[in-house]
Image 1: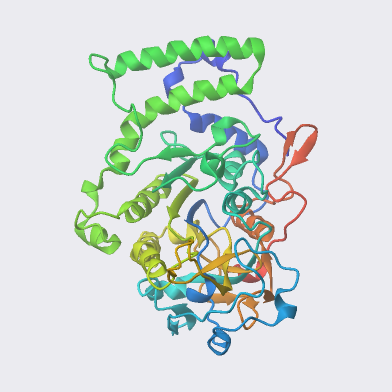
Image 2: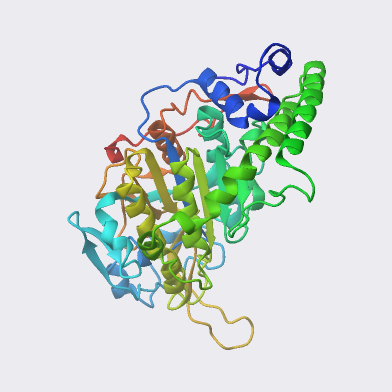
Length: 467
């Protein structure tokens, strides 16, 4: 596929048709482009909810138990294991530290999980646990970019942008790609960028609260009809400019105006939870207004978005960079997301949406089995933590064609490296696109004389984890 996609002649439509610019929403163009790209096979998933835990959760404290670390606690790991490895803040000789948390089998599948996720444990049989993830990047910004774009440097389209480009949207009043976050990730807006794809495919940020977007309300004295007249007129002028200059960004500007007009009614309703039953709010932990509920609110909004046909929802949750104090900080981070993650799975399932929605949970990399101790020059030690680690980490996925109750891949006895069924980030992307009906080798975009794709020249579909 290339970017020579089917384009709408808006000028002819305005002259000969009865449709106004206001009714030709962004989704029309996106869907037309997606039809030109075409699905490569029958999809298992229609939408994606990507829960990114910014900072890199520790795999041996969450989903990959390592009892051998109990024996090596306080000692340096075998030198042949760490030789030649690079770390962000520690040396290969740093001593090992055992996990302070208990693990147990959960559900009928017996999926082993940490005590830090008691609510998630109740939906263990719906999850697919991958313990053998690998990435190329060891720092947060580049790691986030690699996890979302398949490249550790700025300029590439994100997974969500590629999904929008390949599939379009099923809702004429909402973007195909929505971003929800409590704080900026380290990579900033590049983590939801469209890169070199047309900018209509970039993620649209929604805020947490009653007004997810600025300027949704009409100015005082301006009616909806008046606003529509302005949008129509701007559309006509921009269409004339497009016919003259053929700049695809002009078409994006037209679409942005149209979509903004449509979102004036759809977005406020989306963020209003008054229609949600009390038992749903209780399930997410939203029955009482209290601080620290942004993630839970974002998970509920994500369900409402995919319910309305939004293709890709990205949620960023910060607070997983535990260089220190894994005894208190890590449990706090887990507690903030545990109930909402479980509720999201249950909510999607009871609405028969989980089978069509691919849910992903994970960070940009893992953590070391060795301890990082911080003195900060004061002589007073802070509680220990773990350093960045790119050689292995754990993620879980659910729904959308995944094999539920499966634990896939394995790391060595220390949780330092993958020893069975490695899954590189490129393989992860190839598999996700496959579930969406897209062959990762065929969805391409010509840029600077080369056909680019999300997986670059890499990636294999991991068929063993698919239902």
